Length: 198
Ligand SMILES: [Fe+2]
Ligand SMILES: [Fe+2]
Image (cartoon, rainbow, N blue to C red; front, side, top):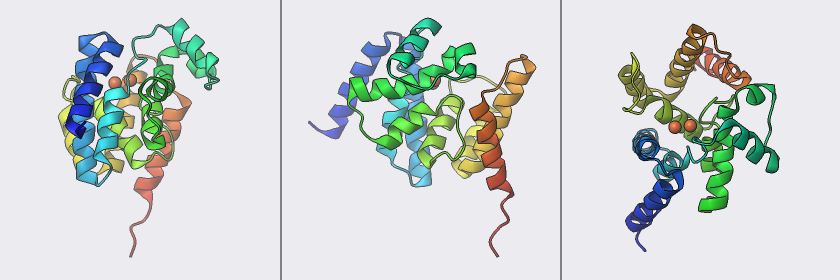
């Protein structure tokens, strides 16, 4: 089967698995933007497209199901995850991508696992999926288009700005940020502050 037909077959399977057109349309937009960002930054565009398509496989599960399915697989559940089980759809989504779709590429699974709360020391593909998920054109918030443009220009600067925007959003609603998100921001700040080579 050709790569194009493989991709179409995969799209049909993802659509059936998600069982919601709205979520599938989001996954297609994330996949497309991730692929474009990968092309721009010399990353693996196929891996980016795949990560985008599969990143939200567990997004529609309710809290008890997320907690149960993560516990069954021995996935880490800290105090933040216990209070905000929705964030578990990312690591569980990576497990489902492997179990149901046979994804063995660790880089793709890592990007899926980190797409919601981010993490320190993210790979280029991790950053591309995080940004594509947060900045895809179906998202509606002030400054989205500018952040998308920045992501094409400079991944690290876009991560720093998008993480800060996400923290401001949480703060305005009196919501707590995940420890991993705060650690991610520190790691990108440090990178930004690194002196330029002579
Ligand atoms: Fe998600
Ligand atoms: Fe998403």
